[in-house]
Length: 181
Ligand SMILES: Cc1cc2nc3c(=O)[nH]c(=O)nc-3n(C[C@H](O)[C@H](O)[C@H](O)COP(=O)(O)O)c2cc1C
Image (cartoon, rainbow, N blue to C red; front, side, top):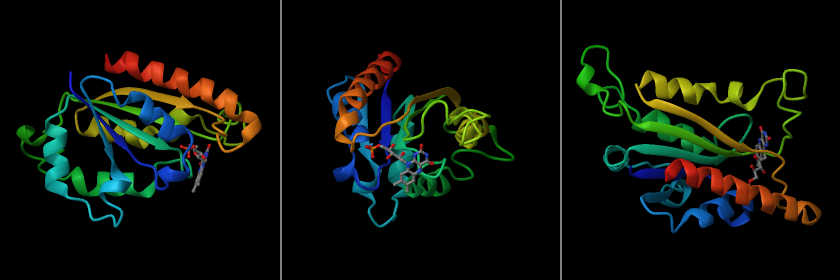
């Protein structure tokens, strides 16, 4: 199975977790890594190239830090311009669901704790609930949504917490590798 990981981090040079997760996956067979912000720093997405790339892969993985309970802006822009009518969905022609049957999974880092992402917690919703627009996007495009791997409390910039974050990064990479294998 051919996997495409789409990384969306607006400042990868300041990233601790996403950078390490992606670096830990670089030598994984059957995995292509695409750094969206490096390719399109001006948000000028090459739609045809992106669509062609999707067609070449069986599983798409969105890798991103949770930003305001959602994706960073360029990944939303990517959805808006790449997943077009006649390519990703149609009202008339079932042949126009070109992503049908492909898998989508989410690989997410967040600062908030697991406790905070509970109905009774300060973020009031679970990450699964907050990420539902992406699950629904997959469903609408007749893709197979495989769920999310979410790592919480990724305080990599805080020296005292770095060791704990590094351990979570290793676990996060292992979970992803199991899916990709
Ligand atoms: C603009 C912005 C918005 C953020 N929004 C959230 C949020 O809604 N929930 C959360 O848990 N963390 C939020 N964070 C924290 C990031 O998710 C966190 O710093 C990141 O996942 C750590 O990964 P990195 O080391 O690769 O940057 C936000 C950070 C920024 C800069």
